[in-house]
Image (spheres, rainbow, N blue to C red):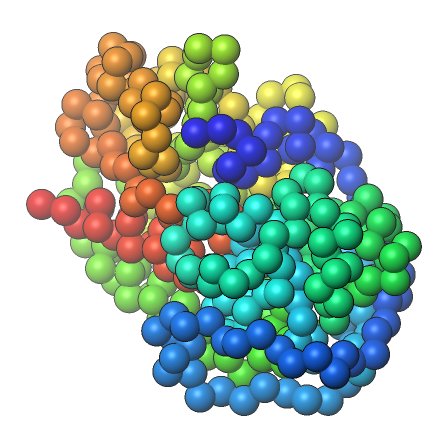
Length: 353
């Protein structure tokens, strides 16, 4: 798996760590007369009976900007995968998205309709392609109000809603906040309430299912990885990471104890996403902890290389059958449905046998 397909690279994490959320900007737009794209055809949306709001919208977005809309956005362009998933879960089909092929490969919670156009890549959105769709709103992920994507879009007169993609102080709460912010911008708050109630019920049921599990230890680590220069790079999800928070909600204890490093470069986990970096040998630091990891199902991936390592095969969790790959396409920075998939993966592994 290549680093660009997953969560941010080390360089991106370092950049995010340097950003400060300051100031308040304002963006406003009049409602377009263009028809909205058809709703997604997922089972949840086929059965959806919630109403769409129609009145004016005023939102303080994730970086403190004020966004004003004459009416909920119908023609929406989305430039990050969690937010793509969220719009689809809200039964709103984007007119264009960043890297639709990558989304279709790595995110399985919501299927992207083939009719959705490409808006370039997540790193370099195609501004001309975005403008050509005549969007009511472009949804981006940012950590400061003068993020380059926001600035470039606003120079073209394109309205922007910025969402905070991660928050180590409350990762599950931030995931929900991103979802509800997009829901308000698109008039789909009733649908959002329904989905989040379902998520809370799902998490509560899962917690009950694993509370009596017979495990030699409650300590755990979730990680993903990649190949770089012929070597396996392991990315542990530490304090403040979303999948770590899910495991802790289920009653497990994080075994990756590195502290959040605000500079990200002096060791520890990054302050934006709670992610660290090590190698296979570094996994010995978690002792007998239960192991969970992302499975990308690519030939020559880091997962393939794990079994070739005597260090990996001698880890207590591997020897005892307590190292579990999550199903491919379980997105580690997704919305409510991706997180339900992760919860199910934890439960299936913990209660197996």
